[in-house]
Image (cartoon, one colour):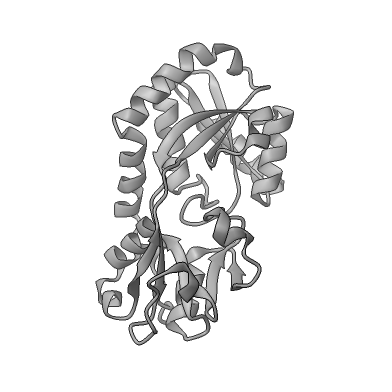
Amino acid sequence: MRIGVLLLLSAMAFASSGREQLLACLDEFPPYQILTEPPIGEHVSALIQLGEELQLEVQFVTEPNFDHCLKRIKQGTADVIAGVLDREERREFLHLLPMRHDTAYIFATRPDAPPIESYNDLHGRLIGVTENVYYFEQFDQDTSLQKVALNDVHLTYKLLLAGRVDTVISSLENLTAIFASAPELKDKILIQPFTHELNRLAYFGFSKHSIHAARLEEIRPKVEAAFAAGRFEAAIHQFAADHPQYYQVKPHKK
């Protein structure tokens, strides 16, 4: 919480536009949210673009994890959170506004691995997953699969390269960004034929207790127009292009 207070005070000190505040909650989750000062990341870039669309000054408060941010949203002590998926229970305290299209989930292995051509081929593999990520229901609920949970998708790829897991599940965008950062890894990481296509969105979650909730009829069409024009996704892609270091899976040289 101390870090969160410092970031919030820093943001307030440097606010110069005089615009009304939009308070976003972040936790450490690279490359989406990185708690430097000021914070950066894919979601941070999308939130800054959101502020531009709504003519609001985006400020940040941080929490140790995603669940703590959700509690802030429930209580109305933060206005918005980025990158949430639609869940019935979340609609009780969130207004969901579109941020980006979710991409396909792929399964990656080392090149010498047996092929994964169907879901059944996942059995018997040691699969690297990222904590607190919803993949797809069959996979998430399948207790017969062997899963190793880590807090960063890039760590799962490091374990794959080190031979400590057999398979990694991630979004296609994650691996595309990794290949852009280190093209030579294309010879060391193989995308398997079996993928799971997603037909869902990642959203901005606005607190129903936010001071901005009363203006939802004004806010929603502005956000939907920016989403349709691809401006949030463009901001995210620009972050990835400008910060390749956050997509590296190779150990740093000492």
